Image 1 (spheres, rainbow, N blue to C red):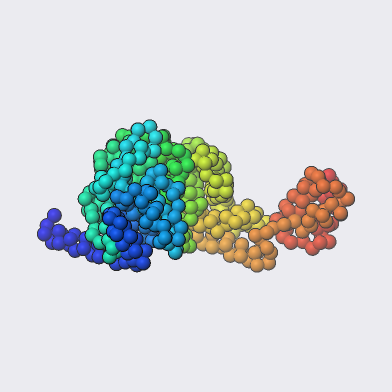
Image 2 (tube, helix red, strand yellow):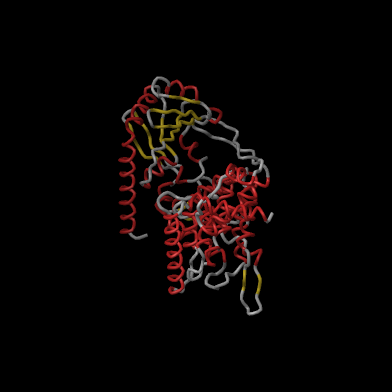
Length: 483
């Protein structure tokens, strides 16, 4: 590196650290009195981990994580009389949590743990030095510290090169990655998550260790795996995270349907395979989000075509088809997300979006009847805004004329939905007669026949729109006479 490059790097380091110090001073009303209490008692106190990392990156969320040489019982005594609330749910791991006003904090005693290599639960041992505590942490970018004194924010401490790794945009481990990942295999998924959240890359030795140790992820519970997958997918660069998940082999262990899409060439031969098409759809779906990341939409975007490998068929003309892949895909989504123990509503919402994502392609040049438009809206229900985004994101053709025609067709469909919705309550399509009216008109008691009549009227409502009570009664009587 040349002298000008070194000077520029040094200037950037100085600027970032100055910005971090300024950021941390915004919580001085918490940090200063806390530092004073620990200093007066003769204890060290440091801000560590993600709190320091995010302050340097300019994405500080307000989370405050501290480490100290004080033992848990001493931490409790120091917090009592100052914090509004103190709780010890993490005391077995040396962590005491507290709240001061709206600010929540965690303070953990220095640790120098050991692991049995079978689970990710350490044999907790308290340590006596900051350096020994930092080296046990997952990544060097999370192993930086800021001393907290009686005057507040003090010296920046970086014995393991975390700032250099942060400036280089690299995820590396303080210790040898093989040791770190054997201690806690979840760190392999966390590495990929940081690729997605920060836009960083994995250090070569880290990626090599994950590839070599990938089967160790089987030691982690599916609930923790799912939590990391969600954090990865909600990151700023989710497609990069997904790609790294596959490159390391982790995807084969936790969600094999995604790398499985690499087996299928898409029918338009415009992408290397369905996998790369799906990554493009994910990126475009992210661009269409209103504000906050949408987990349901993102899962649907990356999984919308997972049914294609199972439905791939080579046609006589040399083409490839994937008939009914949306039906197969929805079933696969349910099976995989249930295996990962996702909540029922997440499973069903993602599966329904996958099931519906292809329906628009029957719209053509606006040939749908009003009945078909009503059914589209009714089947989507509350998912309609997400379905709009998913369908638009699914347009990845390089043919600009075709892409414009698809978007214009969907514009037309949305206009028709709005026009019909203005005249009818499309979000709550109900039969024109309720159950009581059905029973009274047909002289029925509660039972299956009432349900059949209700379903008939619902289908009639979807086909013809709202009917007057007289017309609805006449149609129901005519239908009933034929039963």
